[in-house]
Length: 278
Image (cartoon, rainbow, N blue to C red; front, side):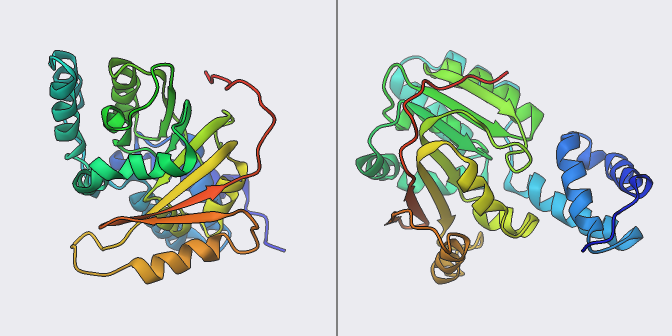
């Protein structure tokens, strides 16, 4: 049984993390969760070093961000559907994960919706800039799109962008591991995140998949490293099936040039309308 960490030590580590300017925007719940897990194995400077390494992976500043004020204006002033698509693709290119998806965008969502059906309620977990690709998803006019991320400036931008792009829903600042969303959805997206979630806490991604109230959970992983040279298909496929060990849920694999998607079909939940959240 793990030794109980004194509250004073836990609070001191959280304060030390809060004192670093680069972590000032991280939700307290995230800092507390990472501190708790670091202190289960280490103390003092070693725990602080571990916690900072986890936070670096969670924040992922190295993936990039646009000027959010300019991006909102760019969508707002785009005239017509094609201009909006061009603007959204340019915004998405500012973030490494969505930039990589642009090369396969014409086939990405059509092939996925061919398996799941076109969703009316969609949740996007640790979403990054993926919601700006709504114009490429061919969602129905009454669709609701709920996005979750921990970056406050990104969430503020996405909350407006989702409405600008003509669907219901919105974006919320939330640590999805600490507090998984409770909205019932047709499809949940966890795109290129599971390998990072497992680095933060082993087993976290399976607990999240179990908690999500969606008929389909689409988990994607990159097929190549960020340098474009390392082939990750075998190692990340093994990672996914290790995460899902013991599950009887059917999985359909869809492989693209630079991203592979594991479509997990969960048992049908009772037919209840989606519940909006604060």
